Amino acid sequence: MDQALVMKREREDWTRLYHKTLKGLETMIEVQRMMKDIKKLAEETNTILTEVEGTILTASINNQTMNATSLTQISEDLRYLVQSDMDERAFQIQRMLADELDQYKGKDNKYVEDNIKEIQELYTNKEINQAQGTIENEEVILVRPYQVESTTISSSSSSSFISNEIANLEKYMKFVKTPSQTRIFRPPPYYQSLKSRGEQDPSFWKEVATAFLDKKKNTNTARNGCQIPMYQGGPPHEPYFIAIDNRDQIIIGPSKKIVATHVVGELEVLI
Image 1: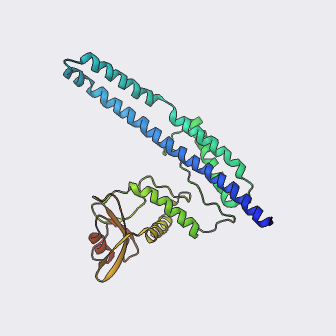
Image 2: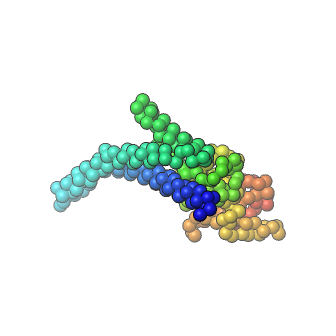
Image 3: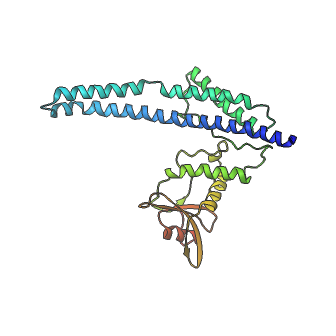
């Protein structure tokens, strides 16, 4: 068998496993986030339940004992959730998956090496902070899988990288809320780019958002003789529309007509 083909298959085998490990890590990060949300919601619910317990029992003329028992059971279940360590267990799984990345070092791929180093340092730093009693601003460490190439990627604008960023952004578009007025389109809630901290870089965000609109545009309208491509998202009863205006700004608004007037410069866009 051709040596080049053998090497290609070997590379594809380890990169496939590498991606699966990163996917597992990403999933457990999301699981941990959800578990934290569940515990927070359980605590808030228990507080509300305690506040209305007296009112409920006062109103329970015929079923006071039964309702009191049910309230106690609900409260105990909620306290169990609050006191559980399920989020910490999820973190420990993440930590072990991060350690598993050691097997993908030394593959002559600087991109992968840098990604592994960054991921493992994040977890090491978190453990140091926990040991020192330091409280972090972020609830969960967020790590996203990087594109694996046979050669080092020198520019974030490579077509394969941007294609992956577009697919990643699309997952977060469900969190976009329809604005009441047209404004600059900013990263959706919870958005994390594949590029480390790319969502914090305005230039990189604009590059990804522009590429997203170019690839995902699904509707258009006309204004002053100009055809204006747009991306329509959101529920049918409350859609939003995204376009690029005449100042090369990516904008979002509540209707085609309103966005179009901003695109051609008839109205100013909110910052």
